[in-house]
Image (tube, rainbow over all chains, first blue to last red; front, side, top):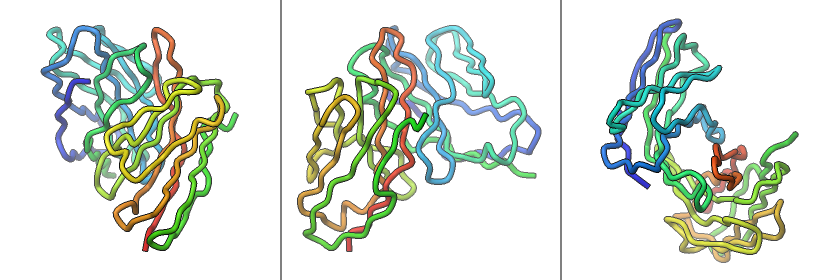
Length: 112
Length: 114
């Protein structure tokens, strides 16, 4: 699986959009971009994933650049409960399960 | 729907003791995984089981053994616990379809080895 690079930490004001970047310059054509988050010390929670098109669900939007070398997770209206560590992962879907590796992620602080 | 259930939630062991961490999922997933997370770090894969009857090493398998008891259950055993194994352990499961999406995680087992 390709390696990802994320900022160590970010701040965001409550009610504003949180934009979390991720670089994955060595991504392969069949690798998906996944985002997870971990609140306190709970188990990681799936947020969203995509291949090349932008994706949106009830939690967030995922913007993937045309060359697929980077992506941005957008939380449109951040709340205090969105304070968490956010992990960007790239992996091949449909093969070998989820034996992926989580990096250190981005620690997002949402401030009132 | 319980999802992924881990037991125990907390455990303190003395160096050299053994114990088994239990994990069960009720989503009929084929694949199950054990991760560990040290303070301030990301998750590291210990072992995984792509399907019932198979297990494979992950990134940090030394000091651990696993058993895929059946499709639902995947246990992690520490034969002789060491202080370096103090960590939070997460179990996860996922499906293996062509569009396999996300993995579901348990709430973790916090293990301290003294």
